[in-house]
Length: 205
Length: 205
DNA sequence: CGTTCTGTTGAAAGAATTCAAGTCCGGTGG
DNA sequence: CCACCGGACTTGAATTCTTTCAACAGAACG
View (cartoon, rainbow over the protein chains, first blue to last red):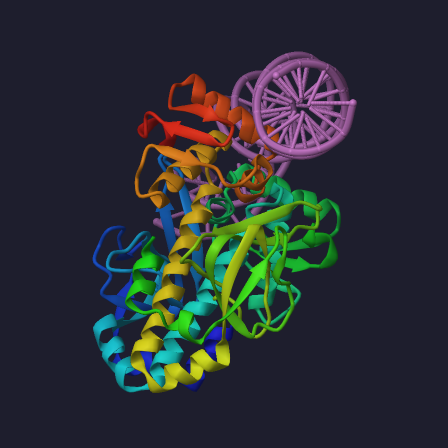
């Protein structure tokens, strides 16, 4: 959302980047790989995640067209990134960006902007994990409606498993939370992946 | 740790900042206040947190001397910041920093650096919340030993309540996790606030 | 039209919280 | 110096929430 505004103002990455196409589950980068680039989603959806010792996966974030990712890395990546659905990403070399930033305060400002935004987003997503199962799902849906410009309907481009891994729950708990919200008339289903939000307030928790 | 290295290379904030002294629980900034400055801890410990609708508090991070905070803000703060113990912080105006960054690529680079580092830290702390209660506490202790330069002893400058709010648990659960780790001989207590880590591996989870 | 994958639901087990005592510690005043 | 107080911490038992395991329903696809 906000990153779209930024990129329309300043499409630098589009200009210096190369394009990479990814099949579903295609790997953008792996943990511990050298972090040579930053990325922008063009089409599709990219997921960043960590593998827990328990075997479970923790989905840190989903990135949609216009979003930048791979910003947190120092010299090596700390997480994994892969395509949640077939996707296209723009890849911009850090070296190139840095040397541009050395010459142009606007470029530097831009990098700082998207990183700061990403930081804020990470903090807000972290707050989800302090809530109960139902509230996590409710808040998650609420966030999705905001991404969709505040409309009342949400299309879930991700599976229940993806939502569960993102929210630190099981698919069953996600499912139960959704039926619970339906029972409260807070949401209703058009289909398994298409949800209408009736009462915003009762999603908040 | 890493931020200390950065600041020793580049003590810009120290130069342009004013100092502010805070009593325990003294407020640095509140949610929704205009975000005019960024901050650096000089002495003591600063906590950033959110208030949940349930009445509970979610402690997002503890900042120690050398650490920068308040970086995630756009025009208004999204969280609260207060002193966990009596503290001194350096306050640098964003306007000043931004105009310096417009002239000096080093300053811009510095701001990007600390923001990127903070982003990575936020992501890593988020991962804690995907673990079980015992593992959260264990990993938390492990992180503290890293901050202390990798030593075997940890001094908890924060109360059980603070730890609980940070890890999204109750004080009772934190306490039980600690006794559980003690029973496994992973840690031992010198006092309630002084812990010795015996077996790193059994803290990991 | 079945096969398969995704999602839902139910019952039992497990994990964390709540509520209620109790213990330990540091500080204060006698 | 000791006794006592209050706050921080621990422990136990009952409750609540989430997961696990197992069975079922529904949509997608050949």
